[in-house]
Image (cartoon, rainbow, N blue to C red; front, side):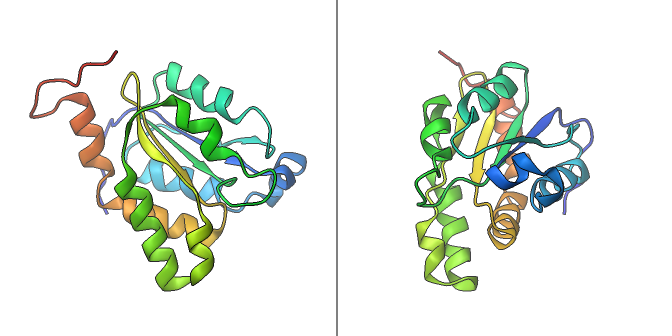
Length: 170
């Protein structure tokens, strides 16, 4: 585990109709926020939106406010209201499919074939924010954080241009 200091601001968006009605039902947002804080990010309490709610607008607001990282949880499956990937994908300027592929691979090894139904997306938004849509299950979040643990610090540094010319944005 890395404990970077002053890595910037991060945000967590929980997509769950149940948690939107009763925040005490959110079992993944606080875990993600604590994980980000352990890595040196300033993280407010998770924002909870209902499935089918203003997911894209909420993530876009975090991007526009300068978050270095936005992690969502929930809404990546195949139910009629699971639309997080569709809401977030238009915000992504540079796709990072390997992150999601590895989360699915780890889920397949642990949870079994249902992990293949997760349709998450990951990438860099214009302006340099890393966005990753994690599954809503505790196991899916654990798999996602394990994958991110190996690359998060590197991705944030790369986007900032550490060791390279800063990435130009359109």
